[in-house]
Image 1 (tube, rainbow, N blue to C red):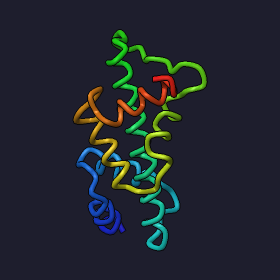
Image 2 (image 1 turned 90 degrees about the horizontal axis):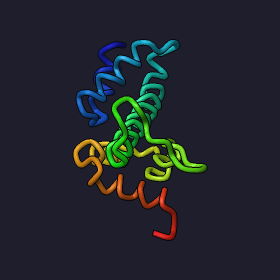
Image 3 (image 1 turned 180 degrees about the vertical axis):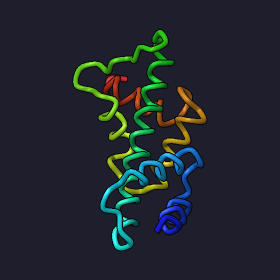
Image 4 (image 1 turned 90 degrees about the vertical axis):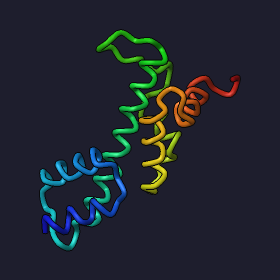
Length: 127
């Protein structure tokens, strides 16, 4: 079954670091069988990618707001990093969209389209 899991993860088109993270987390999963591994690994990949988007957004907001090392920017009012990220990807189950957002944030940082959309969302309709 290990080779099935590895082959399945390889077909997702994730970057090497994300694929390794998903594979590592899959190794810790309980109840993984030949019958359910595709669904469970797929869900794990989505959750992992969404978590990595949250982390990249936090990094971008920290950089944008010039936060000291080790301190995170806190979202104003009712916003959370998770809510901002969910706004960007609309809680989609499309791996391609999630991967594009992640790569945009990773490669372009605060200049990325995703981060600019996140800034506009936090600023509200008055911007």
